[in-house]
Image (tube, rainbow, N blue to C red; front, top):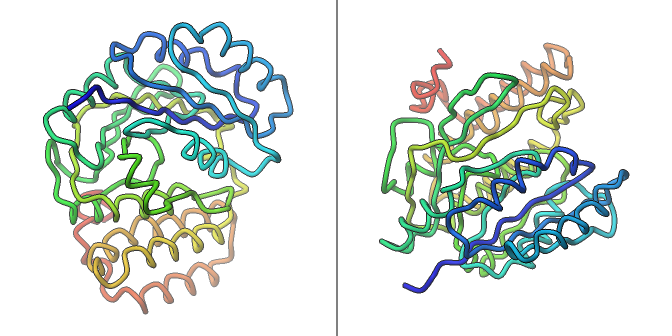
Length: 297
């Protein structure tokens, strides 16, 4: 197999000030055949100008491209632009305020050299102040080759910590939906369905830096976007993966929606109505295997 090329896609909005470790980890990657595609989503500060300046400083170190959206539309739209611009054999996503281990690309490349897997999944570390917590990207005890049915059931929906064959994403026209929240649920659910071979690295190589004001911690979340994402995944899973979708929906839809409703201080009647409607479509959901894996009860 020829030298594997990776495309690293990053969306940015007013976040250049947080990108020191991001650029440092790319500069120090032990595997060098990669390109970096950064899409600025109409930042209102000087992020875009600083990105252009940094591009000139680093252009001899690795391939780096900087683009700007026509209007602020959220990270999903920015990442779609990155996917369209990517030229690598595999694409992956790294958020602008996060970073990956220096040997991340080398580790993945060695696995792909053995077999050209459609999707590589790995773990991450949640970095919060002075503490680090390792988070599994698949619920359960996995390592190495993973069956598709298990990935469909137990994969976490964060955009990061996954490498996809660019050809699969491109040929199946897999994109992020036009929503500003929960776009990752729809994308990951759409992408893994189209992949057939998976390899899981039981090692945290991604560092997710959590800030108090980060997007995932904001209280202005809207459960309506969860419904949109849910319907996209449901459509893609269809009747072929009905059992897998039932397992996946417990966390992706039931748990996530109730959590967002609680954060939004929704009335208990509204929450109970949602749960009742969910139970109508998902009989005895509490018997799902994923509950034992995550310890809800």
